[in-house]
Image (cartoon, rainbow, N blue to C red; front, side, top):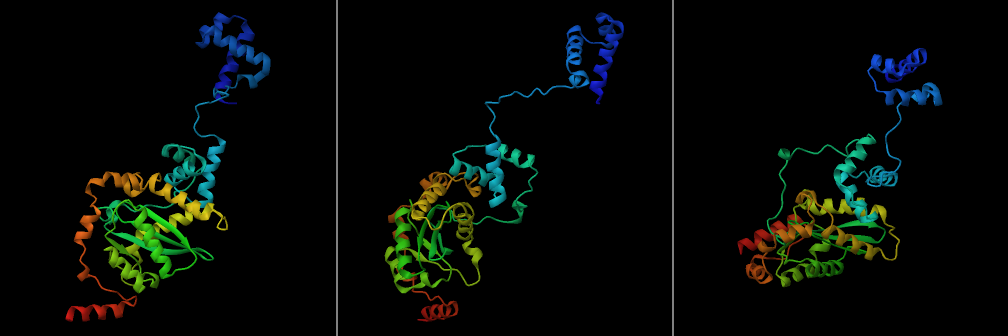
Length: 323
């Protein structure tokens, strides 16, 4: 029996002894309606009637998170280990549910969920990105499943992406993907940055880039961090798209196109303070060069066919300089 119940029981017992409501109210410092309320409850339910009743309304039409929404939040955290911002994005994309980050944080805290990871302090690293859209586009491939190779191109500045699925890594598929990138990106491309994959070093691929007036800038061996944006974006695809998609689906390519559109137009990006890639592009549209300006800055004499073997390529570069 808690303190409040004991106090109310004393009021009721004193009233039973003397039968004078005015005396009891003056003695205990309460009003007559208060004494009457607890006396009636005591008569109906005994000591249990002296317990305080919940004041929570039976219906809460304005509540934002119900059992269904909370279960969706916790499922995304358990199965995919997503943070609050990614959960917010996935709820909007998959279930058309719009929740504030603070609301999602409250649900996670209420369920005693540990943080996904401890983020580095901003002073511990320097974010690297190019100043204008199209200045540098990172391109890479990753295996999604049997005979499913995803080609990915991401703009270093805006994070705008183009995605395609092919059965193999080949020069023909690389050429087709480059044409898709040039068609879909809303700004001219000045250079492509890739790893040392042989599908990028094919002679006809490099010749095509020269014809288009695009510089080819492969990374040094053993330096995947230089292609960090495309590497991280492919991890995002595996965690947020392919984790909820049937790879044997007949409309997989259509679903990938929908995901690409969502990523570019709606998905908030932490590097842009919550803005989407297209919103970032619109902010920089006045600083983005036109195609004729990019073409005028391209110098074909500075370009050469490069070899996938880095040591051989260095020797070829020395020979060119000596001539």
